Image (cartoon, rainbow, N blue to C red; front, top):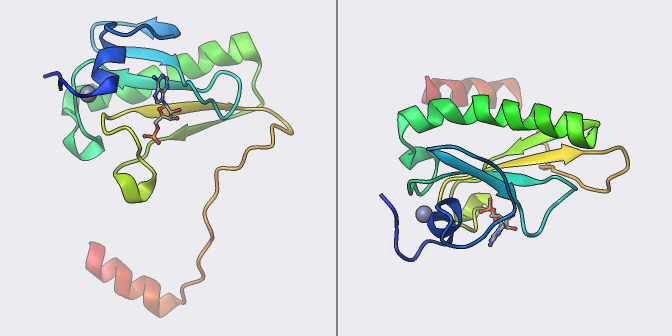
Length: 135
Ligand code: AMP
Ligand code: ZN
């Protein structure tokens, strides 16, 4: 399904032009308009899913192989030194466009970017209690 008021539905389906580097029946991959680095692009399914929780299983299964394919294409063409995959879900996690997408971010020595979190320092008891909650 497409969502009428969703910008990524329009971009993914070609209703609004994009700088497309790859397209198939399920996905469009296009350059991010505000890139972290040269080659920063987005894998966007043509159908609307709000986020990973909402994502169709078959589309989910195709996403990582596609990420690898594009990553290797960018390696050949842009000769990156490293690579980040970033995928934000919900506003608190930094999602700003609520149509599932995956960021592919080539990294270059001294590119000045940081994709970071503040490391915590839980003791063993806290980790054990947490593990009991999860499994
Ligand atoms: P997120 O914060 O994970 O939801 O990422 C949304 C991304 O979409 C941001 O990196 C934006 O720069 C990018 N973006 C938003 N609108 C457009 C657009 N029209 N074309 C290309 N990229 C876009
Ligand atoms: Zn959408």
